[in-house]
Length: 325
Image (cartoon, rainbow, N blue to C red; front, side, top):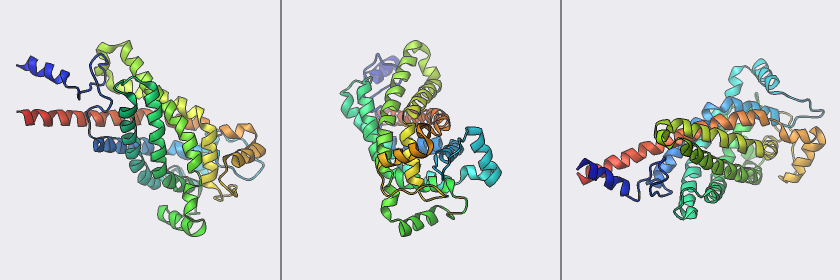
């Protein structure tokens, strides 16, 4: 009877074991979409909170200050922040990140899973579907995250400019208008669309490749596989999209702590200003902390996300078993 029950379970078309590509699978892992939203929200919050100090350093390195601009290395940036403002400055703006990351990642992963189910046409190894789904996910999530990301970056730079999250929100609304919260949205989407496409396609392909290397032990190495695939995906995507991330930082931090203010949110105008003041090297400012952020952040995010999915899968399976019983 036990053997028959196990066989029936694996013949269930809604059951998708992560590391058994030889079995029939579905692209939505048999989870409800509210479960994807919760898993994504937890994963995004853990990822960004854990790596927040690195993100602060990157923001300081990318901010365009008055000419002439001196090269700022990673160590120099860290020492300067700690010496002038103290270690706590590395966490300034983390409240804004907390308010934005959870909802944005809930939208991010749920839209990704919905789009992946639609575009994959039953093929869980379709890299093109993963990339396209990632683009849809980032357009939706950036609409949620961009305002709080702007607040977060301004707080990261401003020592005494703003008293906190709500003070920043109120002053930006009063002094610059609602549009200031979305000044970088177009740039963010143009950056995150290729970032997400590269990220998801690399993650799914790397995970598949690692599983094929040692399929018999894949289930025992679930965490290592997700972490390794996530780190590879995050590092590659971060390196490719650094120039647009620099532009995004300029638009979000304009007018704060001596940063240049732009008459419009034209990407080409910002790029010209950066090149004029800092040369083409200015477009790659902060690429090292950006990669140092996204590699472990992606590893943390995907590991947490997949762990939450596994929890929900086991919960759903146990619920189904109790109903049958």
